[in-house]
Length: 82
Image (cartoon, rainbow, N blue to C red):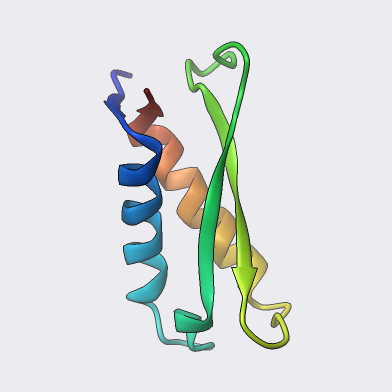
């Protein structure tokens, strides 16, 4: 699959917009992705990044981890980082 190549800033903006658009079951506005975890080489799927670090204001809710992972999984199918 061809992935669009974008800057790290553009990728962070994309995944944070997806995250901040969610409100159920948790208000995700307190969460933010802060940094893309780059790979030295593309993985077997042709992706050159593996995930993103995030921060949360307050206490993290255990329900959030699968949501964060799904946002990353979706973005990895669409984008590579410059």
